[in-house]
Image (cartoon, rainbow, N blue to C red; front, top):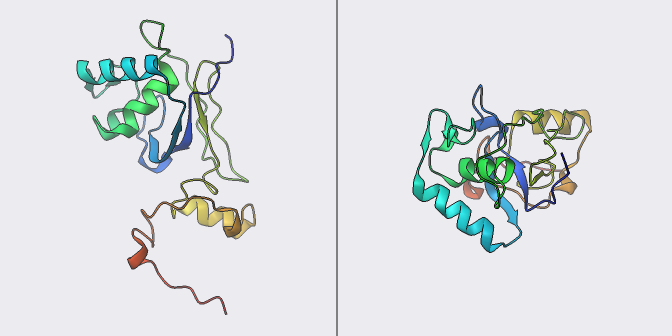
Length: 165
């Protein structure tokens, strides 16, 4: 198989993944896509067809975590679908956690999604993030985009205050 150029990038939402899924959902709080009319048209056609159930979009194994929301269909589309090819790939990733000092998700060659470092982009307060910080594998000053969701900081006005000194 040939390596595909990346058409989208962001972070996986491993905490919202479900047992037995092929790909985890994408956390669309931070999602970058290369605009492409073929991708748009095929994505719209998949959504309008509406084949979503316990087996994911088109029974692909991906996407049922969020039903018809963006997280599941975008993971399915950019990991398993090619705009000029009928059907979808059944190649599996090797799922990781995607934090420094921990395992990284290894994408199959035909995936067009590039997962990013979850301690830098779309940072959410999670147990693995706190572990990476405690081990010194990452630092707070590396954060580029923070997503106010989960943990002790679901919204800025509810975050716990930490006195640095």
